[in-house]
Image (cartoon, rainbow, N blue to C red; front, side, top):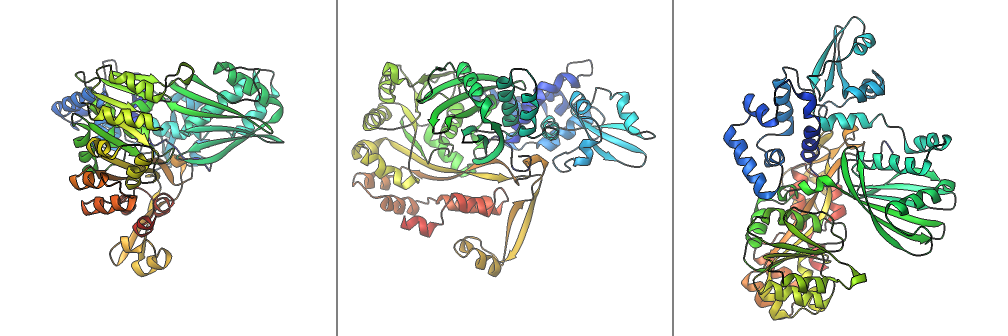
Length: 580
């Protein structure tokens, strides 16, 4: 497990870091009121005007001002760490660039490291330097005792980097399960707590409890990939499932039918909403948790991976008074996340935004969320029909699933509403014939459609352990003949991750999107009236300048954001694309 899990669920590192900074700032107080604004101004990294501008943008988009500053690239998180270090007159310890080793971890006992939130950063003949995110709190005498004859100094490290280091102390789940079962405590609750702690530490999106004949396999989905986390003895699993059912308000006497519920939990000062699904298998009941962390609410449009040109296209389309924007892709490709990011940008006090979703995954202040409820006959279609009567400006439909929803959505988009929705299609071009197959009238679709976005998610190479691989174009073409034409030049440089503590030794940390956009040009609107095939739509879109998703991926491979393997796993070269 320790060598197989990476971190973060398509969430940029700064979002996690700013939450941690808000949590640990009290420990950094020097008697007066200390804020990150004061640090950046006092140390000369940003002007008061620049911070005021960021705060105004944050207020407009319901974001955090520090997130805005870091995501915009005005300063990097490393420069921010340097500013904090200078404020406290200590060195900056960049644990991402210089990750601690196992020897560093073992230099001091775990309980001391956790209590003081510190890590051995460097050691010489005369001194040792400990990195901490609490530079104003003096280290105790224990440190001098562990390093006799050496002076002990402090450096500042970012809270998220300290968290990554502290997670390395955690023993494997199987070891902790065994210790729990040796005691006489409430085993089921403790088992669930340990699983949740690991899941949050590795930024897991889904937890699978999979019973088989001998035991129960626990698996985590991280950055879209499933990893084995541990195994639970079969004889305690029934109590675990019953505990989950109680927390999710499900029937504990139902063992042969599917059940769905929800749990709100608190893990390490973070609120986690959990969607629970239980289905009966031959060897017992399988449970799957979908984790919806609080920090997703802070996700911004700039974090998606959209190029500046794509961002401008999306904003230009979404700010029109009416029309339809569709985001298409398979399940788990980040469609809803993209729509939420767009909605947050459009969310102003003079705009009425309503959503109909199944389920409502994240709540946004100022947005009216409606949950689909089949028991009360509240379907997408009926909910959408009611929303139209609620004087909305912008409507988000979680998914278009049937002809009735298509018809209402198209009419809403033509009667003064901007409608955003997701749809299952393999690519942007095939979305139009698929909508028509579902019953969309060509004359309504051609008038309502503004933009189609297709997307996939790829894992990002860990910035802490990324390295480059340079090959001659001839050598590269022998290894990758189908993609070599898209990498110009005599040599080809691409990037990989070695694997380190920061990424759980996977070489990847986080995810981002690959995109292709088809705007509704006049030529496309005329084509829709003829009920075109996906190939006809693609041909017209390419003539208008549309770039297939593969090209977006090639650009990100060349920039070192993702790897060639990730691109080939996710997107198809244009020749194969054109023949599909």
